[in-house]
Length: 288
Image (tube, rainbow, N blue to C red):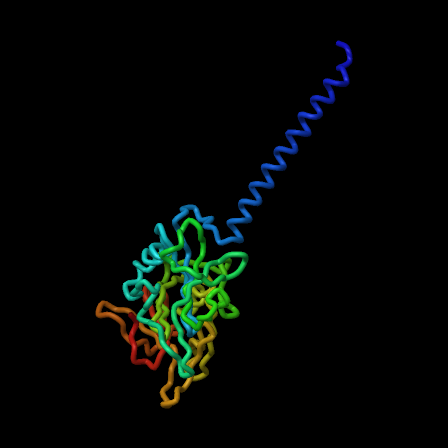
């Protein structure tokens, strides 16, 4: 067979070059689309109507939940359906109350309310429209934060330093392995996590806090050689202006309901306590 004419060789080379260029263009388009959703707040979850919410009160207590619905408000309502005490009250103004916490004025006259943010451009961006006007398919993560915002320029409102980000998200999906712990803030906000293993129930709680990215501090008592909770979310005991102490109180669960846990998790085991609660306050409020 004779040598292939040069013109045919060049034609085949051109086809290969064209194919490579087309493949490169397709890859660039795919990457660009992926980047748009990753950094613009687009919902990249499996179900396009799923939204992950970070709920955070003014005490610094937070947790993650997931819901599904056509709008972000529908998804939030769905997400809170597993929290009977997590009452959501809305109006044409947006969120009026959540977990019993309504808009209030602080001692300086500044208003605090449930402000909403969308994760986009690699940060929390304050919403200028209500959750009922946001399509779930257009967002992946929302922050519902109780605090003060910029009333004159809502878009300028910033989330507090240290606010968790989507890479920190850990949603409790109802897993009951080991012990289910209910953590309740002084604001009334509460949520659940679970943990396994450990010689004591406190070891199990440490595992649960590790699983759900929750800061926990413990202290060792020389009085009874047990370890006790010192702080959760950086919240530690303090004495108010009326000289009342506020602290993390513990509750065991029985057939009759919640019983004050005088022993403490350091002296208990997970096997004997499938459900346990810690509540911050003056000791007068039992778990929800």
